[in-house]
Amino acid sequence: MTSIFPARKAPDNLPRPVHWGTAAVCRDEEFHPDVWFPVPTDLVGIEFAKGLCRRCPVQMRCRTDALNRGEEHGVWGGLDEDELRAVRRVRRAAAAKQAAQEKQAAEEPGALAKAG
Ligand code: SF4
Image (cartoon, rainbow, N blue to C red; front, side, top):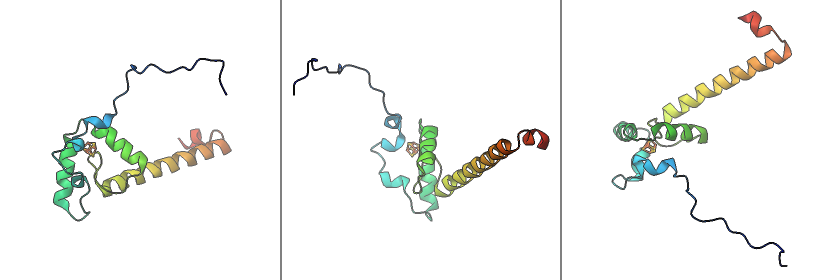
């Protein structure tokens, strides 16, 4: 079927956003990707990966993304697996506390003000 409208194409000279990951230290070919996935008992390897992350210009962005994705393995944004788990645990607890407060506020308006 032919269209009565002429075929339209977007111009291909529009600026494209550059992904933040292009500036990452772990993209450097000097280091093998396995550096960021040391076995959990390899404390020297973990500290080496964290040291590289500390030099990385996108460390916080990487950490935020890894936490939001729920990364369970490797060093991300300068945090090892245990630290990533700990941050997620704190976040979950804070979210649960906030949800409980909102539920209580919805059930008894003014209860939060009384509790101080
Ligand atoms: S902070 Fe993230 S992006 Fe940067 S080197 Fe570490 S793992 Fe790679």
